[in-house]
Amino acid sequence: MLIGQPAILRASETHTDALCNGVSNGTVTIAAIGGTSPYIGTGKITGLAAGTYSYMVTDANGCTSTVSATIGEPEILTPGVLSGDTSICAGGKIKPPIITGIKGGNIAWQYAEAPYTSWVTATNNDFPYAEEKLTTTRQYRVQVSNSCGIVFTNIITITVNPSPDLNAGKDTAIVEGRKVQLQATGGTNYVWMADKSLSNLFISNPIASPLETTSYFVEATNEFGCKATDTVIVSIIGRRPLSIKNTFTPNGDGFNDEWVIDNIEDYPEASLEIYNRYGSVIIKWDRDIKSWDGRVKGVEMAVGTYFYILDLKDGSESIAGSVSIIR
Image (cartoon, rainbow, N blue to C red; front, side):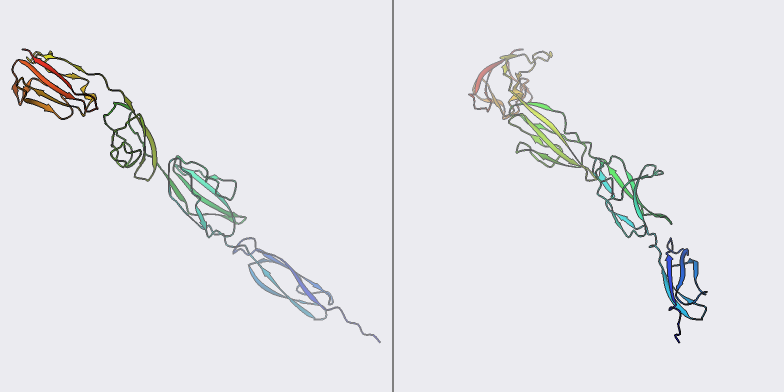
């Protein structure tokens, strides 16, 4: 006689995880294989939080089988932290902020401009603004979202600082051999890109003494560390010919009261000596020759003829001549 027995009773499970972190909406479905029906303990269990559960199935013969099910859940939606530079110079590119600690969702970059009430969302997860040249201050944040909700990182404000309103000065022309003082404005610190024809490369107003027409480039930095460049051109023109009068009438009538060497200012290094008829020097200039009013130390010189020697200091022969005072 052959005595049979039912197949071994085996409980099985299928489950769905909780949809959101901390939410009790997971499910487990218990089924039975083998044994003898009907079964106790099969069916669907709902409203489960994340965790591990144990279930027992009993068949009609009182046989039992247990099975465990683990309900998972998504990571808690964590916004994370933004960090990075908070200022740039006008027209500069943004260095992408650093994101740390984001969990549980998809990210989307957002920015807003004053008054910071409307946020623009980018279409990709990478920082999409790195190639933009900012001209106005912006705020940035990251939106972290999943089907359970939305959270945001902290806000980073990137302030756009102005570049120096640099002006290297007006282009100018000087006579060969003369100097001119440059004057840059709009910065805090200055660096001139020039040869030895500038007296100082690190001030706003160096003295330029070029031997030929020269473009002087200057870079200025302001209190924000922002930079700007500008250029000023100093052109060289030839020296004008001198015109030396041989008489003047220092009588106070406002006409021809002083002896003037026309265009002598083109020869700032020139020297001049004036002699009386006895050969004594009565007045002289070692450089930067001025007009003569016929006085020496406040005393009027007598009517008569005086003699001079003019050395232009340019390698040419000295010029000798006479000038007469007439009253």
